[in-house]
Image (cartoon, rainbow, N blue to C red; front, side, top):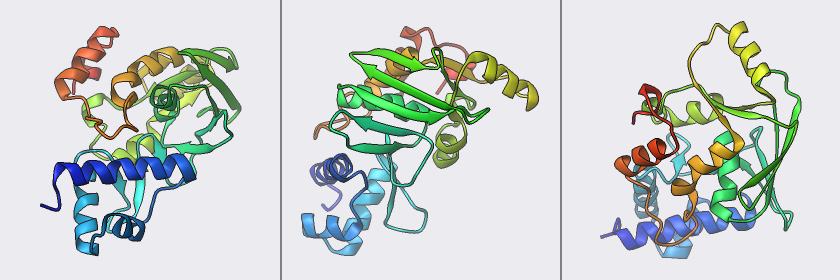
Length: 227
């Protein structure tokens, strides 16, 4: 009963609303008070959210580390709204995905994974203004491996480069050949079905089949994109 769909969805919505308002997740005690739950019941709901890939807990705790695209800790991916509220995203993809989720103008401040130079992006109405002009998002792990260790994936394998030449230099220096390179616009398009309604109460994660069809519609095919 405690892990009913309605309760899990209500808590999920509360987590996202709290992130939107305060830039940090609620703690377990706040969830307990808000939903009149004991600690074991609150943990059960949080674990249900983690199983459903809505949040990631700090291992061994009841503390929320990630609620995609939000990060509870500082990262190189800072997102700012026009109302001046700001958030840390988990990765380059999540930073861009804020635009799909909020459907409003956002500004991203990040750094090139190769040289650490600043990258500044403004996304508005699905369009991008970037400094430097053509940064890219690089995904180094194939889709089938993203959830093997999602903290590692977000932290180390979904990053910005200030240009394709910087990415090429980095790959050559590190003897890396594979991976996928996306423009900011491609990354935004990739984000839409996963993030568009994420702050709504009735949000449902797209199925594996729906995501595969979306990848194919964007021309993202081949072994790298197989889920």
